[in-house]
Image (tube, rainbow, N blue to C red; front, side, top):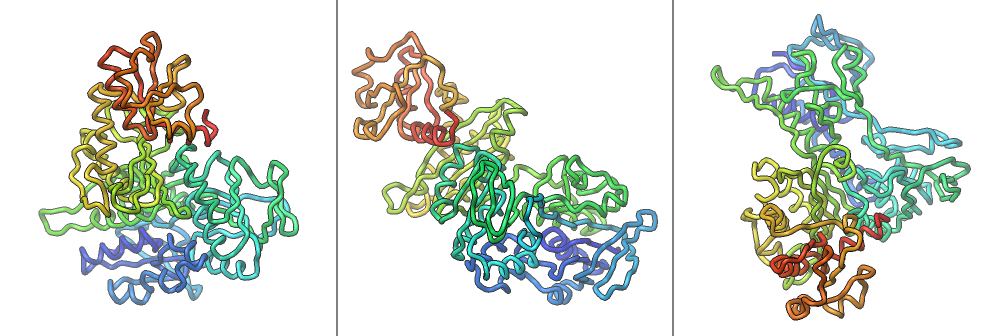
Length: 539
């Protein structure tokens, strides 16, 4: 069997290595347009910032090492220029300039994606940088050595990481994001407030709801007329799939230019597959290293039989995409989709919680700010978390629970690792599941700050010392411990919205009042969530 793989890095290199382990005798050719076939793309910003000082640490395996270990014909600086589907050949231009047609039985397109660039009036090309490859990284580092200031356009994960690392290098850094908040594909505005504060603490000048209008002599002018220093500009506006080769071959593309594939990664041609950033699997496309590696592995399993009676091929299920990013001293992570996308697609309930990262009595515990988006059947549609520690574990656990048919409530019953330095007897995931379980059993009716009904009686059940630090305007304070003795102060002729700091005491108060005939709602996530909504301009 002759297999040609176009593109290395995550999907392509993973596919070649797995395929060799499954089939010692397949003829495998791996073509990579760049100089390296396997490197840590996600580590690029950290080498720019000097956090990863040694460039060689980003090189997972050299072309020669890969060739020897896996017996693969590795060709770097080699470009695939055309596919002849009838002849089943790929035309390539080798590093020495020679051109040849490589025959294939199976072809994998793992051609990745290219950073998006936008025109900025007055900005010369030699001042514009992206960060998607080792070549991009080397070029940016060379420019940083002679620069004092930088402007990053785009507040996604790459933009945030690059801005923070440029600031770590000592540059004056401005980050401009067109959306109302940074990390808009991961976080909703109220959840992004903590991340934005952490980014500013690194020294980055953050400008949201802004675009760049022009650039002249090291100064950029924004659309509001403000000017910021910008010896160089890094564009971190996302990526476009490199699907020109597939399009020229007549393969079916999705609405955004990705190569459409099924759950077995077949394109519209049964002998051609696609994986990684260039692929759209059953309508799902995401530019992340994790899915790219899994898709490369799935391709290999799909084209190799272990023996005459067994086939490793199983459908690749995209599930919910997971993303995580370091933002200063905090971590932000998410799975699924943010609320902004759900509003136009389906009904859902938003739930907030602010549990501690580990047992509160053990030193160093910090809050994790969590938001879960739950469908009408209790299914997990999305989750977001921001905190100092434990964020990755929480989102991973939630994501892993997506496959449970019982939905969000299954989180309540998970038996997870526990010791005081690492977690709590009731983990954050357990607590979220218990909140959902209470909703499912009609024991609680949560609402968000934006859903507080007009004319509602706002009941703050915190202690007076806490209330002195601020409360929701118009709220009446009755501490939880006094509530049963002061029921006469709570009206029964209008909705009552109870709240505390993070929601737990609010739930206790809700149960006291509901069983006495009151029409009660618990403010999800309490006053902490209300403050985030206010800071994000949602109230």
